[in-house]
Image (cartoon, rainbow, N blue to C red; front, side, top):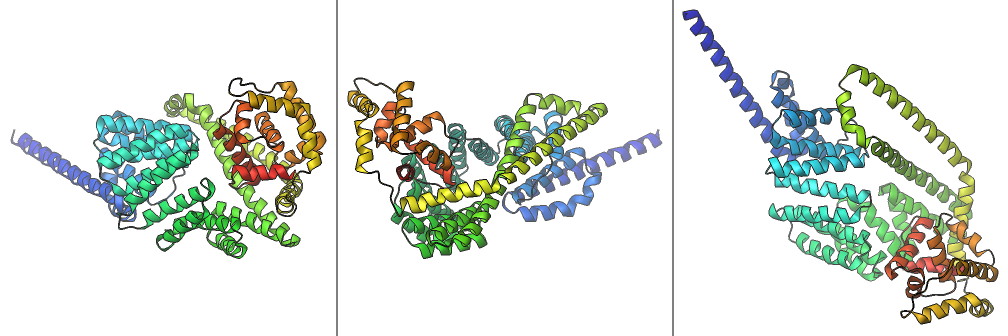
Length: 538
């Protein structure tokens, strides 16, 4: 009996020691969780220091430790190359773990899938994180981050209206948290989304609010970032180069290093359109040294144009080859994204079931075989596509050189204005008279052109302006029928407002088409008027 009491006392003591040790571990991890929000490097060092003790820790502590390691690595910009750990952690917190940490597990699953270019899975987990945060957690700071990351993912997929809702919710939550820094970033994201929705004045309204709020912060890099984006808006959409330059100059002393490439790109374009070639050249050279991949692409494009204009054909060809090389690299990045999206969409409906079946040994082997086959097919497809791409390389180079010559010589030197004789021929044609009647009848009668009338207009334009269609397709050969018809009407000097009536589209839609065609053809932003200038040169 005495022996039993001794054994019971020892067991009880060990139990309470174990509980006390577990409480200490959880308190340590909770402290590291808070540190990671502001100092990821310090949090990683703290995690490394307690790592050896985690082998004997409870399962709850070990899983919390692994979740915090993913969090700290994410905040320290250390890339995750696999979803295996986060998938296991999500399963644990769904079934056994502390439900207050479930939203955090979902959130970092979304972050990892976003970095792995698996947008459908990322959106799925961000939505689950939002629901779990509202149900189990009072962590409104995490909820604001969930909204923001969901917004970025949706914007990347070009669901701009949906992303706008997420960014507005992020701003409201930041406001509840009294988090001024993130309020500035959320206002910036709202403004940028309105810009994507082609509402530049609404974008300007939110940029101004963000700028005023950023001016209250000690860290001036926030205001600098907003001013750079506003400068881009003024330059490209609002066509106010002076205001754009003023904002860039205000931003210069406080610009963060990560913002240098976009700022140099805006400077180079501003100097180019204002005729300050030497300043533009200086920006191009700085972009080659400090710019990101998109900045370097723009620099090679600008240097090619400059050399063609200066008659330096050998240098122009060299820069153009570099431009094509870097464009190939960007296309490969985009191709990788497309493959990842395709696989994600294909597997999306069966992913949950597959994750459960993967626990079984026989299904693991089958999945490995499937992955091997799919990977082999994808690699073979990419290899064949690459070979075909390089076979056409010189053909593409010659085509792009021709485009640049059209821009520089056709517009800047000759202006390519139609002769009075050509204008007379167009104006005297029956189809032109028909179009003018339809315009005059609006808005009492809103008649679109019939297919026969469109064909007649096509024939008349090509008979007056020899090989017009061929020249247009040499510039960009993937036009839709609607885009081509807009170009026909531009060629016969129909105003954008009247084009919108004849095609049953809004004026904003016609402006968007012209701006988009310029970007597709030349891989750089331009105004609708820039595209009209191209059309007039043909």
